[in-house]
Image (cartoon, rainbow, N blue to C red; front, top):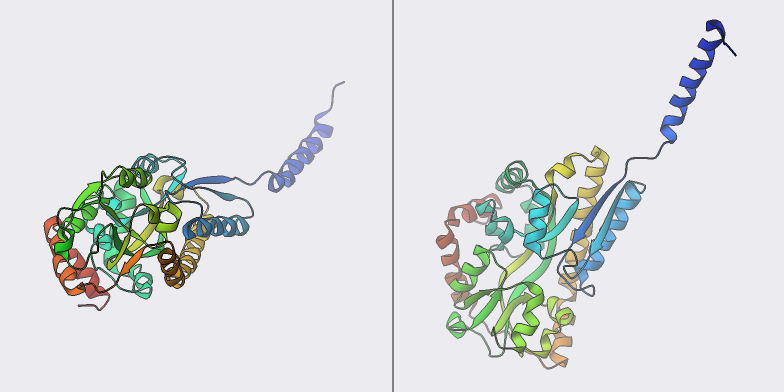
Length: 331
């Protein structure tokens, strides 16, 4: 049956109108971020990451979903960071020590005795130096820092002998992450750094391949390190600031409102988690003492702080550290 042009035009117009009307009802573009961290599911950060994921899901009405993987289920940290640089839809909880492999100056944030309080961490994001270094990470290395408001607390030395001065660490093999600032910091403080993945520490301690670790209190129960280590030595040598990073290319493809949700909820969840960890430190410490660990608190902090300066000088980032501390009004 032939349809005249007079009858066909209204039909085509109606079909076009129907298509336009149907367009908003079509499925919203959806994005997924597979987020990896090395910590146990019992640690506070894991619950914090899940809370972050829930808030982002709610704000984007399911348009952006975070799938959280604990215990390095997606792979070791360094491998994940390389995947991120290639544009993969994965994220990683990391630190400025590893990011310092790309922008050396940013490693100061994991240097010895760099910063003292959570409030100072929150202020760091507004400093010119941190803004510059984050821009360089994104533009030159493909690493977008979503936020760095996640603080695990102070790192201490956990060993099988009491530590009170840098000299007490002499000849001890202490596990560190495989990044220059970690290794030079531990060397400057008196020990022999031994690079090792987080998941390898417990068996290495059992086999006496290492003599101790330097971690935050919250890591100890989850890793059951109280079974193989006797002393918690409160050197407070590093306040562990964590960064959440994703692919800069992947992030740039998100709708602006999704980008905002991801960043804002990262900061909110990070600060809430950090404050919970800070408040729970004494409870964790008391529990570890019940399990047989001995806490050494009479530390010569002045000697440790003086020794720590050598790490910044060795890596050529003493000027960067001083610049940031000046921007914070610390110098």
